[in-house]
Length: 614
Image 1 (tube, rainbow, N blue to C red):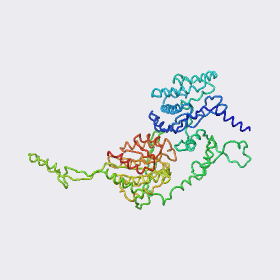
Image 2 (spheres, rainbow, N blue to C red; image 1 turned 60 degrees about the horizontal axis):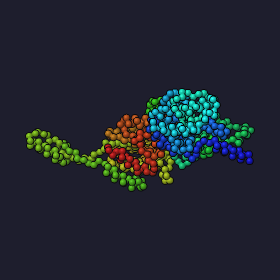
Image 3 (spheres, rainbow, N blue to C red; image 1 turned 120 degrees about the horizontal axis):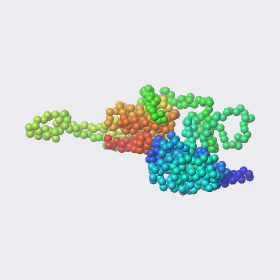
Image 4 (tube, helix red, strand yellow; image 1 turned 135 degrees about the horizontal axis):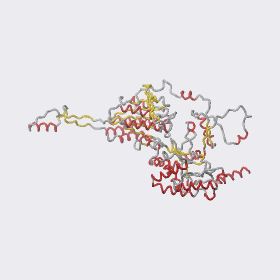
């Protein structure tokens, strides 16, 4: 009975202390696509991605009901770091859903200017950001004033606070109503209540390692988004010392039996199914996730190496000494000879026929591209040829009759085929993610194979010069660069055999692959050189290439390719591509395929659209 009464009391107090309006709550997944565009349109850093901000301690004053219920000490506040724009996973601050949605856009506008300004405290800096946003974008003033009025109605009444707390609260109210009117926050024993219209007073530091980053999952667009958002909202991350193993039951503290805690020895660098399932089950029940560094290592490196293909089954090495630079965005420097690229080619050189399920679409594409191919044209005023140029001969005869001396050296014509001054290199992402399934019958790698085959059939029929390559990486050494068809090779059954033999590789170090592909394409004498990138996700690798580092290196490589006179264009099936591809390729430099199964049919059409004026 005592436990039941306590549980009912806890539910009652928690419900009374709850200040969120559930019916009006807006989630980040609902507004994330529009927020990303809005943030960049206001001049925000294009390399930042919109991600969820987990609840963290704000250190501000709480109401007495919240103190009684033990809630409200951790809130989801907005901030930005060097990699992401962090926004609350959900906002239910106001009873009006439109206001909650407006708060998301106001926070994005505030963060768009958080790259400069006076080096001061949280109070002065947020006033500066607010004044700056209202000055630069006057259209936001009405939205801000509505948010400010609704928020001030929920803040503590200074008349009911003690002297120091009342002065502090009055300063916050004045700073919200007239940003910049208060120079400093008056001292008080406790910080004022949190301000959801401002950025975080003490933003958490970004994870220092991949292990810590693993404790902060990103929201996705799948059907279980709501459950993931709830898990992330109540989850806390911490670092602790490694637990010491005990020799027996005597060392067990009995009071720990009733606590919600469990120690799991989990190696994050391995991908064993048992560990993953166990960790996921434990993580759902814990509010705090603590990570510790283990002093010993397991045989992970050995297992990883055993996953590599045997030498007899791996592709044949063509060249293994190409050193490439890499852009370090923190140092703002191009590091020379940072990566090593290995050129490979399939050992299976047997010619292969086009798969039966591609025969009909290939036949349609061949007819379409043959019609697009330049027709044979008459070359007139030639010194030699099978036919006489009647116009040139009449002018010659007329001039001779009039007494004008002319040489009879340009009186012939002939019909010659015209070729487009174009070369295209298609670079396909063959990373491990291509082993995932797009539907019940096809994997991503199967879709890529079909796309490369139909693309080759179309370009071969149109007569354009083209080359096909694939790549994957395992850190910066080696980067595996697979040759499917070079510019010097004809398209035939051997090319089809190499395409059918491609397999999922490792990771996506895109910058180095773009630099090497750009060097190959830049050596072609064509006047128009198109570099097509086919990928299913953002740049990533096992080392620091994950996140902002890989994004900025790829952007530097793409810009370098443009300076060489190349035309890079990315085709992706990643549903989150709008978050990062505009920063890499520009708004008109990429295309997103919403249904991956349609890629084989759409790829040649995209190529025809890109080259129809050449």
